[in-house]
Length: 322
Ligand code: SF4
Picture (tube, rainbow, N blue to C red):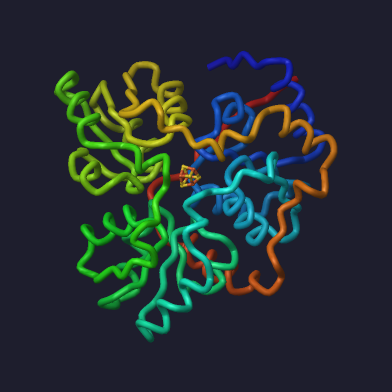
């Protein structure tokens, strides 16, 4: 399929080749950013891509900061830049290191599994890390009866309903404001209109929405399912950038957002202009670093996380500009 790039996109594509830059974009980025990225995927898929030896001289990470931090840890030889350093995930703000230490004291010996959507300080106190696509697999792989888990309470509910392991919440209030907006009435209304549709919900949605959907999965799993399903109409409960990507990649199918207001303002802080600026200037303030004392432990648990199967590969974008 021939791609019509804007002048700005062409400039970025030329420059990224010249500067040997790898551009990684999360599924929630706008389509114009996804089009110029080398890989588009969920946080697990992008963490794996950044860990591969690649011969690049810089990585530009269009996602929220904790994701870029993971790339910086997994790719210590290559500087990682974030187009807008203010792109912080509010879900990560629910959990600090002190909260984890307090739970460890309350439940001695019980392993702590944190969702990737956490700060480096919180990760430094965790025993394991998971993504939404690997949470159940990680928890089950531990072979224990109880696990301390967080900060997302909806994802904790998802794990609880898919394992026999007792899940102790790190924060019963922790949630993603984008996915927490979905409710079952929205889903029921669309199901009534499209009775033969397939409904997929992200596990950060409230449990009742997960239960009402036909499938639950990460954005990586959504991409795989939409590509493979025979259903022609698919209802999706996740961020709008993912819906736009799915519709673009599958013009023969009707991809319907369950709620059009599901937009992550933090992910959308990145723009093509900011990516170009970082490519040209390599500004110090956009360089992503993690305090040295956290790095060895986080690298070890991230490498462990990258070994689990998860829910599908990152999408390679073969964008080229002459
Ligand atoms: S969609 Fe939710 S979890 Fe993802 S970055 Fe935005 S606020 Fe954080």
